[in-house]
Length: 128
Image 1 (cartoon, rainbow, N blue to C red):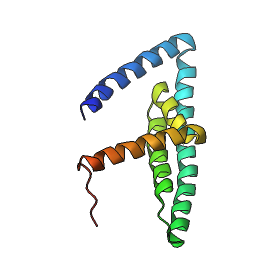
Image 2 (cartoon, one colour):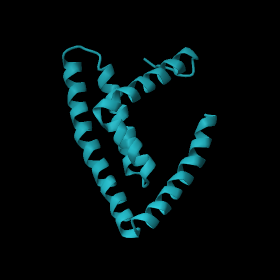
Image 3 (tube, rainbow, N blue to C red):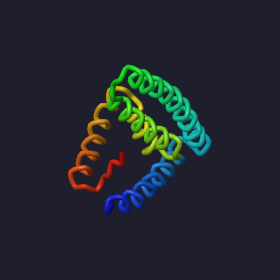
Image 4 (tube, one colour):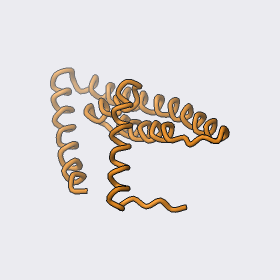
């Protein structure tokens, strides 16, 4: 939780610095166009991959399987889509990494590790 405050302060400051630098190097209008493009790209990719993941979850549930990997995919898609919709190049790069297959595996392992840590500390409750 203490890292969340640090992230909420440093990420916007870094985003502003990168946006100002980008505006200076490539110009204001190309920077705005890139931000809008990544926002639309994020919405498109998140929708496409999200619908595919929902279909996979339903298929696995109908076959009597637990959709653990598909749920982690869904979490990566949700977070990646939100990051792509957030204006800024740092969050856009992170969001794209969460939506692309080769790097999604890294983020899924990271999320799984975080969930296991929460469950081991008894700070994560499962209600049945």
